Image (tube, rainbow, N blue to C red; front, top):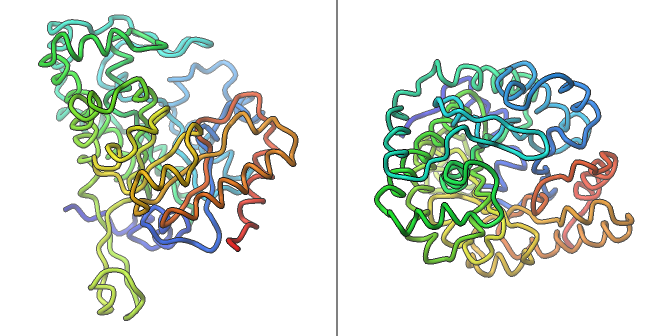
Length: 384
């Protein structure tokens, strides 16, 4: 185990007692915490103004700009957490992979990775060699952000190994990830090597964010929904567990009053050692939820395709959940959206704790005032 430095927001006590962190740790809060995936950017006019003339990956690697973009929705909406502004291909770029994000299309790679030899060329960059210098801009952006956030937690961000591998094999976005799934079965040894490499690159990226000040970490598996449960369990889950292992050992201590509940140490009034909360989210992964939790996550994000109470049932009603307002509802009349949000909140009571979020990202055309209104609704809501 590795203790976070004393100035870290969790270790210093600034965020350890926040609604978000305690919810991720399974402690239901009177006020349900809320943040939105893709809240940083896209729908905010101040984001679009700031980004004029700057390419996406350049913005991600500019510490001052990345920090400002992360902070914008916290200021505007009053959400309970900032989500670090980045992109899932940033660690690949930092590892030397030639990739650019083309407007309207997404990440496009100069060379696809489709053979064992292609994987060997990737492995010429050892993820273990990606030290502090590699992630210096990321760490600086996190430090700038947490200094401004105060007692509001920052969530670290990384793409899961399968999603990174799928992008690499396809060479860009894909609807069915057929090439990636083909490589998985046609050359399982090369696939396993590719997954191990992406796991270590993604894990190192996530660890850099947490060490610099993030109070939680979320692993996004955007494309895992294209997999069967059997393929996920055999060919993907071990790599996701490997990615999370890079941050699983990071701990901090919380001083608890005797009898306050929690661990035996807390009951005795001794410091309670806790790990940095880890969240795992995937798109179209209703059939994979338990397997996604079992890789080492503390909480599981649920997309909009499955009711939250059913998701909690599949998780045994023992796992904190995050989600799962349908992004399409954000453009519906307010009474329709309000009823939907209240329904999600009620269904979330089936889990030990609930962090309200969207079941996917904020659509670019969303009216920002609607998001602010949703935050106000969630913060005012109380379980009957």
